[in-house]
Image 1 (tube, rainbow over the protein chains, first blue to last red):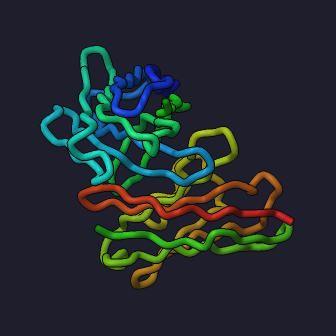
Image 2: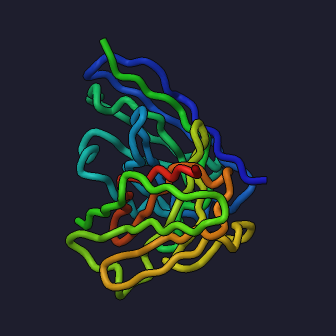
Amino acid sequence: QVLLVESGGGLVEPGGSLRLSCATSGFLFSDSYMSWIRQAPGKGLEWLSYIGPSSGHTNYADSVKGRFSISRDNAKKSLFLQMDSLRADDTALYYCARDEGVSGVDYWGQGTLVTVSS
Amino acid sequence: QSALTQPASVSGSPGQSITISCTVINGDVGNYNLVSWYQQHPGKPPKLIIYEATKRPSGVSSRFSGSKSGNTAALTISGLLAEDEAQYYCSSYTRTRVFGGGTKLTVL
């Protein structure tokens, strides 16, 4: 059974930082590209970042470039997102997902909610 | 970077077929099978229903089909069921991933 479980969300003040984690099981994590995707309340999906299997290949959406950093620990089958300089418009449900590129995003977690507010 | 445009809403009656379009702006979906489609019910994560423009993952109903022509991809749902009422998103992948704005499907 494939499982992706995000954690680390919560309430943070503007300018603050959070580190999201995603624990995975049930698929070959070390061979997989992984993405973070978010969804603001009542809004659509926004891809944020992906990381290749060996961490050497990363990419970011312009909206988070320079503020967010993706990383992974293949030994622990875990994905991370370090979020700095948070803004109110970063408020969203953050999904961890396996990203198969042209073959789509096939595994999704349930998401962790990040609220940026004073 | 490409942008994807979807209609905000579509509707249909049970048993009917509907089509949701996804138009690529500043890009070309025609030469590459880059488009995937996702279904999202309220309070749930998205579910992959079409990938590489026309392929269905294992376990996805054959009532869902994908096509592409020029700069437009399309999702067709045939034999509409009440459970198909959901939000639908297209996505394209090149060096980054982009999602369309989403289409709300209402089953009347």
